[in-house]
Image 1 (cartoon, rainbow, N blue to C red):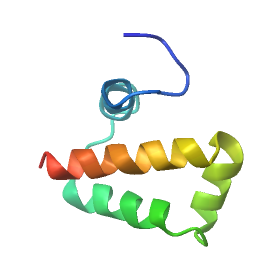
Image 2: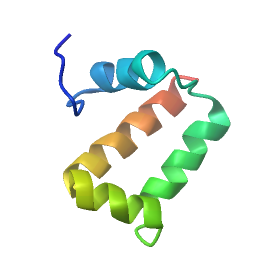
Image 3: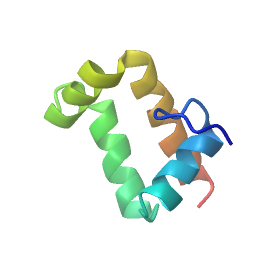
Image 4: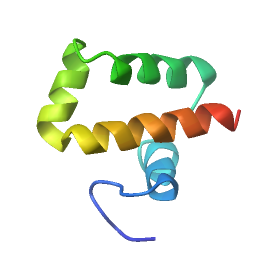
Length: 71
């Protein structure tokens, strides 16, 4: 696995979230993040886009949706 600061694929993102950050991808957490990332008026989403860009927001949203489908 590549040691990228910003994950560029699902597997790297999943490892970053669950191992490096120690977060549990619970159904509630996943749904909260999906809702937030879909809401362009959400302050956290606006900050996310400013820092990482619109394409990365779409990538992360898709990865949360993939994690949700795997539950």
